[in-house]
Image (cartoon, rainbow, N blue to C red):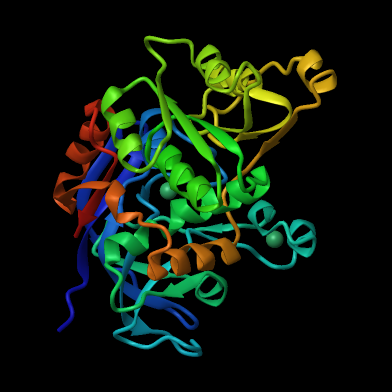
Length: 347
Ligand SMILES: [Zn+2]
Ligand SMILES: [Zn+2]
């Protein structure tokens, strides 16, 4: 007899996350059921928990979490290419491939995106569309927790492409959280000559130095715009990546880039916020400002490939492992701890 109940972390609203017994999902045709082996915490989850999020992306109540990897335990009728026992992960989004944005190849901006929530649970039902367009197999030598990180890495790879980082560039990153650190190791791999990273927490900067940051700025003790200018003979960085998600740091990024340089606004700001663009910097300084939202299935595939090949070592940003029943404690730790980056939740 297969048990019909599972443990899951249900999100009911802002600051209301509870581990409960819920019905184990049943699958239909085209779908697969996966036993989750590891799920990783994400800054986006923390933001959602603290302040809510866009309604069209997450509707409560729902099982929470979106970075996971596991083993296929049931396969629906008509599924091609997957069988019981496969180690897989799936992107948390599946574009429709039909809307105007998809037709233009902007799959991350799909107007009918299917979002997948439910990583912090014993099992997850992967819908048919996701099975078709955004599932990746995990090679034996890759751990489940590493594979789960393919999600944020996919977003970072998409952002790095938008930023057009080139061999020899000086890249300045605002924020040394998990996303900033993934940008750091990606920029180094893309051939950045120098990566400078700023944060308010010394422990994170120390971690960034361990991962290869060439310069770090403690933004509590030093103006990070001035510091980047000082480190670049007064010019500013070739590329600036904002990896926090606040209007104030979005604006800082504009002042940190050299003339003709590229600013990538990567961190999503609270809904309804705006920021000011200096006409002077844009016109006389010819700076380019871009943003990047989420990723497309091809970046998810690429991310999984780069983790599997060992090209990008993402394991180092997992700083702790905790059982599912302690999920709320895990988010408390992330909110308050200085040295924790990503926690692997093991159901
Ligand atoms: Zn994430
Ligand atoms: Zn679409």
